[in-house]
Amino acid sequence: MLKSQGELSRRSGYAAPVMDHKAFVCSVPANVLADLSRTEDAAGLRHLAMHLGLILALGLYVASGAPFWWLALLPLGIAICFLFTLQHEATHKTPFATPWLNEWAGRLAGVPILQPFEWFRYFHLSHHKHTNDPARDPELIAGAKPETWASYVMHVSGLPFWWAMTRRILANASGAAPGAYSPERARRRLAREARWMLLAYALAAVSLLFTPLLFWVWILPCLLGQPFLRLYLLAEHGRCAFVANMLQNTRTTYTNRLVRFLTWNMPYHVEHHTLPQVPFHKLPELHDRMQGWHQVTSDGYIAFTRDYAASMQIRDQAAHE
Image (cartoon, rainbow, N blue to C red; front, side, top):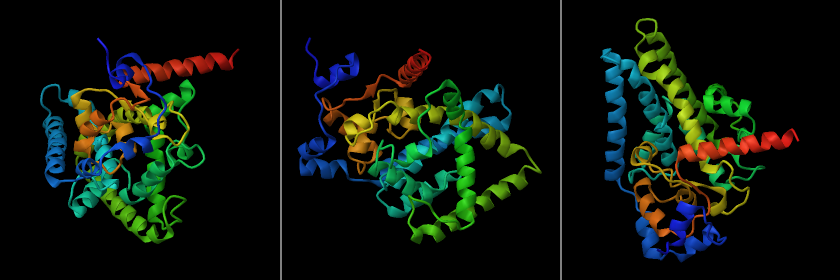
């Protein structure tokens, strides 16, 4: 049976003819684009309630000391760390139609993962503007994708992330120059946000003098869950071309419903970079419309990780020849 180009691309690795993401955008009728780009509160609030409900349920299970409570530490940490994807969506003002919901969702999501929202918004929008440009993409400037096993293990551990965010919060709180991605006019906002975050962390530290609760339901789970976020994020652009074409510099990863839920549908990443104004709940529809346009995909995160590891092995062998 004949398959569409999109089906062939997904299942057999067949790549569609080289096309630019701008050509796809131009091919979408204006009324369809308007419908895809329409945000709404209901979808975002439902998803947020389920995500927070999962965190609350797992946190209560750990805190209760119920049988095998320690088995909930890892899924709790993954659920907390993947609040990153909510914050990511909030930078685009797409989870909700109400502006203040986007703002506060982004700010509050950043507290447990040590990522200041005001700073990340500028960082991330610069990433969209210069995706996979080694000279200008802040994600690549901040740290190139790992090329050796030692750098890979360190990257996946999440330790460089925690260290970088600690330094960033302290720098912002001190009123230091905001850096290349943030305008000078944002300095006061960045400082104010960072100081509120430091106050929250100080109160959390004080609480540890009286009870270890936050260690068990927040700190330890986040340390355990962060590697899974690092592995997930590596698939978005890792081993993609250093070109301006979003169909080539970004990857869509086919995965299961649970992963799509935790990531707010961001495995549809080619779709997101092609039309970043499309809210998370419309990305599956956009994905269907892009069938035949995908050029970089993976059949799951295990498959991507295996391929990435194989590429490092090949490069390591080449370096020793």
